[in-house]
Length: 462
Image 1 (cartoon, rainbow, N blue to C red):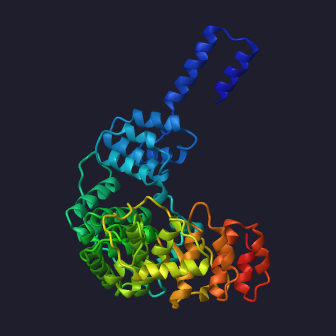
Image 2: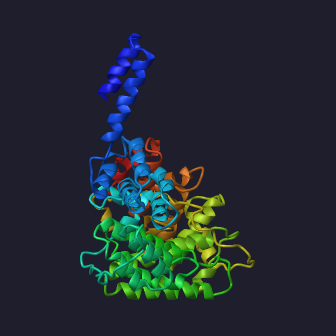
C-alpha cells in the first residue's frame, strides 16, 4: 500500500518516468508475490483461516491464493473454509475446484444461503421461519434425540472430511439408510454444519415423491439443533404436497396422508407430543390450502375423509378460496357462505391441487402482546397462525377476516366490519389485521376505546 501511495503521488505530480513507473510496479509485485496474502502460512489450515477471515475485503487476493494452490486437497480446504464462513457470498470460488464432492457442496451451500445464515444465538432468527417458530416450538419437556455414534468416512485424498461427510450422508439417505446417514452427520463437531447435514438427510429421505420416508425424518429433524424448525417445515410441506384436489372423489389420497401423519405423531410421542401436535396441525393447514388452491366451486368433499383435527383448516381454506374469487356480502353472509360450502359436495371433478410454492401466505401475528396468549390459536394455511374458536359460526367469521387480509386488493370493508363484532376475538382479529395493513385507517380510532385491553392495544399499535 505504501508503494502504491508513493507511485500515485509521483504520477499526479508528473514527476515519474516510464522506467521508474515500471520499476515501482515490479517492486510492488515482487514484495506482494514474495510475502503475499496467506503465504506466510506454512500449513494449509493457516492459509484457509486467512482466506476465510479476509474474503469480504480481499476477494481478489483470496482467489489468487486459491488459484496458486497446487495441492487439490489444499485448494479444497481453502475454498471450503471460505464458503462455510460466507455462505451465499463466495460462489465465485466454486468454479476454481475440480468437479466432484467439494465443488458440489460449495454450489449447494450457496443455493441455500438463507438457511445457513440462521444464527441460533440471535433471537431475530426465529423470524426467518415466520410464525412457525411458535407453531413448531418445542415444549419444556422435549426429550433430546441422541445421534448414533459417528462412523468413519473416506472420499479419497482430494476431499476434506466435512464435505465428505455431507456427501456420504446424502448417499446413505438416498439408499434408505437413515440411521447410518445420521451417524455420518454425527461426526461433524460444528452444530450448524451437523444440522445442515441432517437437514440434507431429511431432504433425501422425505419428498412429495417419497412420502413414505417422512416418518423416519422426525428424529433427524429434532436432532438438527438450530435448524429443527426449518427442517420440520420441509417435512410438513412434503407431506402436505401429497394432498389430493378438494374435488377428488377418491378417498385414498386423504387416507394415505392421514396414515402418514399418524406415524409422525407416534414418533413424536417419546420426544415431544405437543410439538407433534403442532406439526400435524401445520401440515393439515397447508394440505387443505393446496387442495383447494384450484377448486372452481369450493365444497366440503374432504370432510368425508379427513380427521376432526383437519376440519378448522378445511374451513379456513374454503374461506380463503372464496375470498380469492371475490365473493360478495357482509361478514356474516360470507361466513354463512363458508358454512354452506362445507355442507355442499362437488358435482364436478377435474381440478388439481395447487402446486406447492405458488403462493406464500403472509403472517400477521408474529408478536404476542400481553393477554393474547389467552386466545386459542392454530396454524393458518402455511406458517402463519390465527385465532380459533370452538364455535363454528365465530370461527367462520375469523376465517373470513384472515382471508380478507390476504387478497389483492385488500378487502378492507370486511376488516372494518369486524371491528364492531360482539365477540372479543373477532374484534381483536380485525384490529390486529387492519392495524398492520392500514395503520392510519380512520376506523381504528373508534376501537382505541374498546372495552377489551387487547383490542385497544392492537388498534393503537403501528
